[in-house]
Amino acid sequence: EDQVTQSPEALRLQEGESSSLNCSYTVSGLRGLFWYRQDPGKGPEFLFTLYSAGEEKEKERLKATLTKKESFLHITAPKPEDSATYLCATPLGSNYQLIWGAGTKLIIKP
Amino acid sequence: NAGVTQTPKFRILKIGQSMTLQCTQDMNHNYMYWYRQDPGMGLKLIYYSVGAGITDKGEVPNGYNVSRSTTEDFPLRLELAAPSQTSVYFCASSRGISYEQYFGPGTRLTVT
Image 1 (cartoon, rainbow over the protein chains, first blue to last red):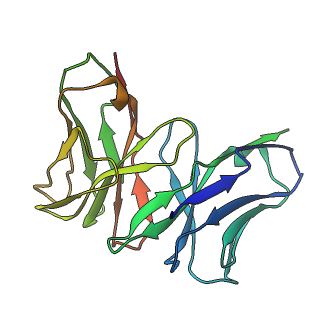
Image 2: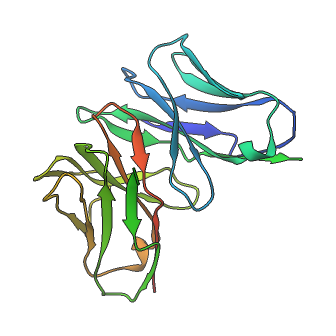
């Protein structure tokens, strides 16, 4: 079954404590892996798209990487404003419908 | 640009009532989507549209209807509301089918 699984469900870090979020997928023929950030009470906001294994993209304290089975979102020296839920998704089927993970809730304590 | 706007922000419905969730985008995107988000679950696609006059079902279309008469607007209709439709609803748009999606702020709907 095609699915996207994110871990952990929640992650609490101290400010400055680096870590990684995981997004594993079982879809065949990957056609892109999307990362989004969602703040409470708001819609998801696009962060990155990765298309092939070995690809990396960076934005401020965030770096996304991709392998053939999973993607990681690395957070370096996070700040409290990085607190949010991070979602990953990948297109499925001939009409490219996105299948979404349940998200990782990241809390950065000052 | 306002991006994607949704109204209302909150709504409480009684079982059996109907309502329309409004969605408008000002980015001239051809593709528009409706999702629902339930606690602890990933976003689920309800309906999507690839352009004015063209709509198609997503993963969870039962109990919903859509129309797309203009590029800008993509309303979602709930007929005979049920408690299972209690959720947060997001509208999104994209330039193309494989491009990043831009989301509205969401509508929190409670059916009691």
